[in-house]
Amino acid sequence: MFIDGISGMTLSNNVLRIQVARIDAKGETSTEDIFLPASNINNFVNALVEGVKGLNEQLESENKDDTAKDSGDKKNSKDKKEKASLTDLDDKSK
Image (cartoon, rainbow, N blue to C red):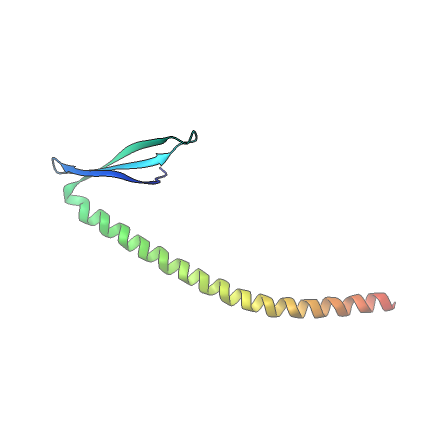
């Protein structure tokens, strides 16, 4: 289920009802409900928070890796350009 946002929420009869909205292919908004027993609300919210923290850590790690890789690629691409130009000169001199 893809969710564009939360359009409403209520607690009734010990059930949390979360109305989620999404935009369909026609550009119209449609809604669906998620039902959670009141006794599980804390576990659900805590699991979401921990999941988001884990995703943020993973994204930060990937960004650091990409930054380090980009720095290495720039150095390697400079070396490759020099080697490529030397190879071109050698091929032309034959």
